[in-house]
Amino acid sequence: MIVPDPASINLFYVFHIGVTQDFGLYYTTVDMAANSGQGAVIQKNVQLENFKAVDCLSAIKHGNGRDWWVFFRRYNNSPAAPNNDWYLYLITPSGVINQPIQMIGSIQSTGFGQISFNASGNRMAYINYKGLIELYDFNRCTGIISSPVTISSENSQAPWPENWSSEFSPSGNFLYMTQIAAFPPDSCYLIQFDLNSANIAQSADTIWVTPFEENMGQLKMALDGKMYLTTNYKGGYPYADTSYNYINMNLTRINSPDSLGTACNLQPFSFYLGGKRTYFGLPNNPDYDLPALAGSPCDTLVSQNELAGAANGSIHVYYHPAWEKAFINASNLKGKTGKLLVYDIQGKVVHSEPLRIQNGYYTRDLSMIGRADGVYLVVVETEQERLVKKILID
Image 1 (spheres, rainbow, N blue to C red):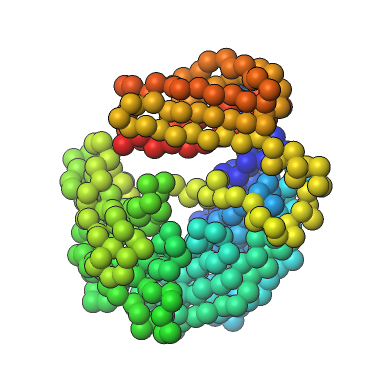
Image 2 (image 1 turned 135 degrees about the horizontal axis):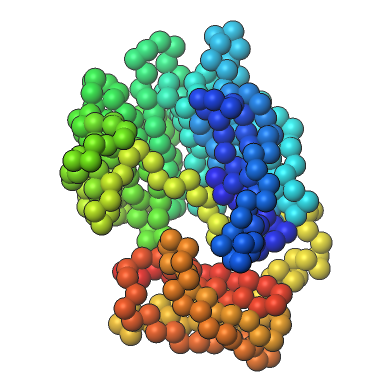
């Protein structure tokens, strides 16, 4: 899980957990400005905890729009010592700050789980391998987890339902979940829950069933408003060099995830990966663009001057597909000169030019002719700030 350092545009924390060896929670610090701009590790494997971890590392932006919360859960597989402990860490310009342990929700006793958040970050879901499905409220200002709602409890004995992944629809009205090799044996399920139902558990609707060869994996919302799902061919890792097929060379897409039942418009194996292959996972990225909670009491970590300064600079980018142009407008900028940078999804700079600011404003009509379909980052960088906006070319 990569989290930017709120104190620097160049520093990033890489949080990682040991689930099979070197147990615990660690972070490594990367300076992207070091090594002549190629980046370098400047602090490696700083240990925060030294016990077994549940494989559910997650993060979400603080309500002040600057800091971050990182989530971690303890795993103890001893029948005498299951737990419902939640470990949170607050990432501020001062560093990584441990928070009080919160004991809330059901006891969980497996090393595999997943945390997912709705689009506004005030509600989260936790699922695990033994069948637990729970909803919680989350306060982005205080970091308090509250109001647990149990949709499904853990199974006390095998075979487990093997919940693998969950994701909220954009509105937060629906929760999608995958189960691997569940009931009957050697089948996988994509399930939709209606979170507005009076009985969420009974609202469960099986959208898709596949044989074990089409092993369902991670769910993830994308910038285009669609949800994507990985499939792992026969659960294998690593694949043989000859193992290329429609299952592992495509993602499955849910075109209308805010629609009930089959109206969600599931399209199996519809997103081609360009000759590459997928396993169970998708990138574990938090929502880097989640805005601050306007009008909230979240200025406890930020002075009024900082808030005013942070609110000043803004950037708007509109991509016109017919003209193949990106219309870039930035206002209330600090400084006089800077750079316009465009990055592709791999982080490669595909365009760079100097820019000049006039009375706090910058505008540019940038040709994107010849650019491949995909997500790009448009960056306006001055002597004092860095503004970023994503665009999608399709």
